[in-house]
Image (cartoon, rainbow, N blue to C red):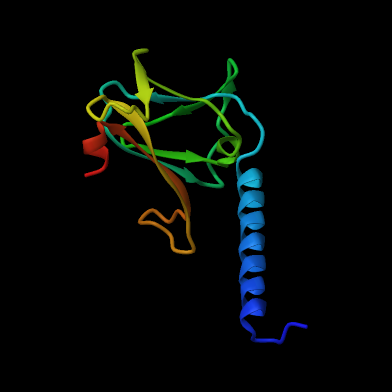
Length: 148
């Protein structure tokens, strides 16, 4: 019989807690990004460099699905308002190009290459300077420009 507070009981509790945490993390990752969705195409103003902030706004339109791609048109100021970011929570290919048609690399491993770099997402109880609580950040630039 194992006594409460004994070393073996504590070790068992720690092991079970770690196992449960692993299961919850796995479940969360499969729920958050499940299935395969259409590619997401970001269309940027010619010569755009800088931050892109994709925000959830109930008044904004849905992201259109055109020719098999979700198409996100980025305005010059870089603030993109969408009704929902659900289209991002399936595995998807990311594509980017300038309005002129010139393709842009995605998260290039070449630190000196101009690229669309995903900077992560945020959901918060505290709104940003525009009143938004949910957003995804991207940067168009070289690695050093985006991570300065």
